[in-house]
Image 1 (tube, rainbow, N blue to C red):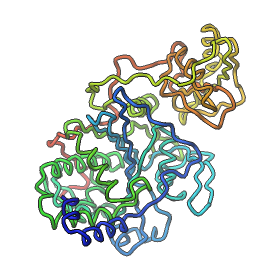
Image 2 (cartoon, rainbow, N blue to C red):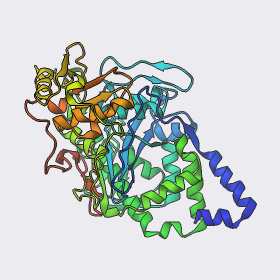
Image 3 (spheres, rainbow, N blue to C red):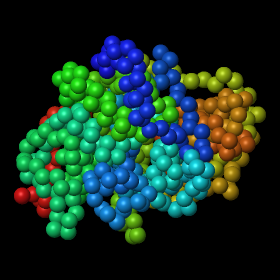
Image 4 (tube, rainbow, N blue to C red):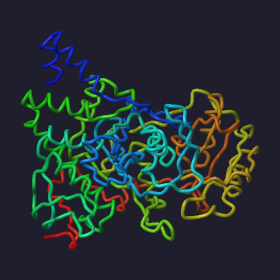
Amino acid sequence: MLAVLILGTGATGYLYYEHLNGNIKKEDLTLGDKQMADHKANAAGQTPINILLIGSDARDSKANQKLGGAKETFGAPPLADVQMLLHISADRSNLSVISMPRDTMLKMPKCTAPDGKVFPASQGDVQTNESLGRGGPGCTVATWYELTGIRIDHFMMIDFAGVVSMADAIGGVPVCVDANINSRGRDGKGSGLKLEKGTTSVKGEQALQWLRTRYGFEDNTDLGRAKAQHMYMNSMVRELRKGTKLTDPAKLMNLAEAATDALTVDKGLDTVKKLYDLAEEFKKVPTKRITMSTMPNVYGTGVNNGRVYPKAGDAEQLFRMVRDDVPLDGKGSKRKKPVAEAKDPSAPVGEIAVAVRNATASDQQGPASGRAREVADQLTEAGFARTTVDANNVTGVARTTVLFPSADLEGDAQAVAKALGVPVSQVKRSTDVSGISLAVGADWREDGAYPVSKGTEKTPESAGALNGDDDKACMKVNPNYTW
């Protein structure tokens, strides 16, 4: 409808279109120094789309300071307190969302800010929301790629004031609580959200309060807040799909104005046309095929008590499903994806040199003893006579990966993966290696064959999956925050 309005008003419409384009703020997609892997196309030649949605807690304007409170944080580097990866499947049949709790502890990659300032890779674990302060949203993108190996095509970032303006423009979104809630404790902590038991339509500042509520939902942690955000987003999609909120031209233009003014995006989404085209891809997915989830996690101990870490096994399973374009709702795609073969054929296996290293260490565990040697022996038995063990590098990686430096070795690298049963999607080109390097990751700590999921293409229960059609979902209120 916005396109019709613009085209129907001629020159005036063009000026308005340029005005909207001017509203949009743009930044670099990634500030990391690693090249993200390309997507693998399905049988129809289609590729998925991955978008990182970032909620900034920036107190950099009067509007944000009024909404955000916490005066001691005014002027501080912004934090990425909301991080959600939206995955639209290659065939556009389903959409998956993974939220990462803001308290997640992980390694930060090297990031170079647009002004040239270099933020070196972290030596220890850093809280994930600090990535935004390391040059901007491009560092948050690089941090996600470092952890998950999921190629990210775009990002969208919004702040407090942006949420309020867009929520007002969209109109009321129904949300539910199982008891009266007042998110404000005697110590002043809380979002200020006050609702009666049951379903209430929220918009504007009340919608922001819902999305920010931590004290009052479940166990007062970021995990409960993520569930509330999932419920709001699903409900918002259902409301917009009804179409009633987008039939009034004035409301539609208000939404266009609010959206373009509220968003910071990567340079691949820097016009209304590009955002419109992306919206068209979203529209192809029915609400019943939308699945919201949270990265499976475990609580830290000691100095990191109360912080969370990716849950070994479950978190990688979730990331791998998104990397491999496997629907989180358990319903397989109608099209089977072929393995993308390298253009360059492999050499005879006896001539392929492979260096195997033990990269099984994780945030919770040290490297599993003898893994590089055991896997090297498997390769030798498969005819890879030029296999060696690299004992000098034991830096951990989440998943087993075969790296190669140049296109002429891609076929050889794929031959290594196939011999071990490692998915070809885990064969990556990298400038960090001079020859074929096999990193045995934390997903292969046990002896035996590579543990490829067979019949277990299932979202881990620890991800708390929520279906987009579930209009009965209701947030559990913490008894200490009821009235």
